[in-house]
Amino acid sequence: MYDSVIIGAGPAGISAALYLKRANKNVLVLYHGESQLEKAHLIDNYYGFPGGISGKDLYNNGIKQAQNLGVEVKEEEVINLSFNGPLDFSIKTLNNEYKSKTIIIATGNKKLRPNIKGIVDFEGKGISYCAICDGFFYRKKKVAVIGNSNYALSEAEDLHNVTSDITILTNGESFDLKSEFPVDTRKIVEVGGEEKIQYVLFDDGSKMELNGIFIALGTAGGADFAKKLGVMMNKDSIEVNENMKTNINGIYACGNLTGGLLQVNKAVYEGALAGLDIVKYLKEQEV
Image 1 (cartoon, rainbow, N blue to C red):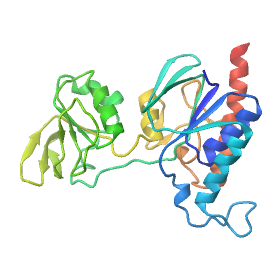
Image 2 (image 1 turned 30 degrees about the vertical axis):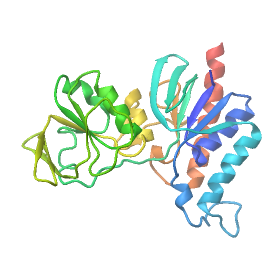
Image 3 (image 1 turned 90 degrees about the vertical axis):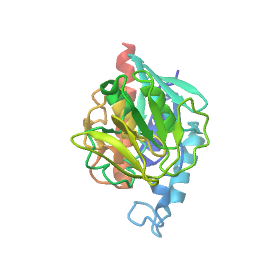
Image 4 (image 1 turned 135 degrees about the horizontal axis):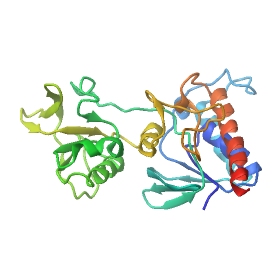
């Protein structure tokens, strides 16, 4: 059982890890894929680097600093989070499952939307980005998941609790995973209907009639995890208080996920706030 599991190894997540570790807390940082920071060619507005520094170097330096302090850092794709009770969270990755008293979501903000005609028009009208949140409304109905990764497969498995009629649509991409669900690799031209989603139109001219579509492109992001856990959102941003705590005890968010100024200095500051407040929170629970 960890004191805190941090999802994301950018400035916010690593900053939180440093403060937690210095308070002698047992911390695990999980990350997967390339971060937005790594894509920055040169950062020249951050304190302490008179000649600037590449985003990739700053990102890697942060991870090394945490590891030198004794923070456990693993490159694993998180596919699901669950709340089991006070001070008891489960974090499931592709190959492992971890337990933690608290969680910090610091993945950065992303909402991948496929470039398909009709997707934006039917968001909230049959188009969803969260199987756990909206699956109930499609009980025993025909649905599809758009995606070709473990995240898409995980969403299909969540939907299997409410319906058995599920198809994974890869939108022309390959699908190399083992799946108990039918997989259709045809390119999607359009989704449509009258007041709600009713069909998917493929590039061969054929249609698939259905009642709902769940978008699950790439890997799950912080907003996806937050929605599954019932964390309050403001559009695509996670709502937090002044100490980066969400509406659910034990769940914190920091960095780009909280909106506002999308800068490294803000992420570092918010990570520090989250780490310090968790130290205080855990101490209060021991009393």
